[in-house]
Image 1 (tube, rainbow, N blue to C red):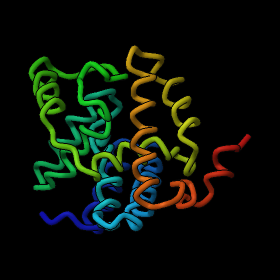
Image 2 (image 1 turned 90 degrees about the vertical axis):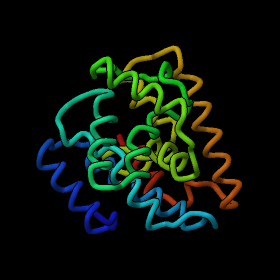
Image 3 (image 1 turned 180 degrees about the horizontal axis):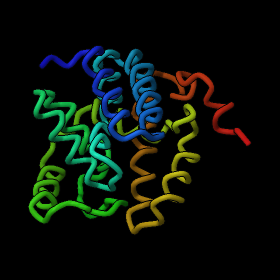
Length: 200
């Protein structure tokens, strides 16, 4: 099946019906952030970036879970022939390529854990992987936000882990790399980021 805007948006709608939640609005904002930033990067397609952002959490269709949604999303996309989207379903959670940097619970079988461990260690990341990792930290279900606000949002829900600070540092490095590429702050490409970051 071809990965295009129609199929990706239909997939998200169906997933939302299967497991309603704020994750779907978050996914839409991640997709928009990916598209907006990719449009200013010479080696990226804004349309492709949008699709990868839209599908990064598609594994949540299977219900409420922690790290299981990563492999559920991987399988969902692989079944449809969306290989790169499948990789990003896992890679978006591992900006550091080490399974031990996870902040979630591995609510998966031992076999699936070993598969994910090897996959994360050996995946070849490109700028699409890194863009979704960044944009995942720039989007709340209510809109775009400062990285620091999203960092706190995630930490309040998942707790502080040994790799938390290193994960933050890696995302900041990715942000700086994209800003060097586009020649401006990524925040200039995220409409409403100020208002949404400072809602009270």
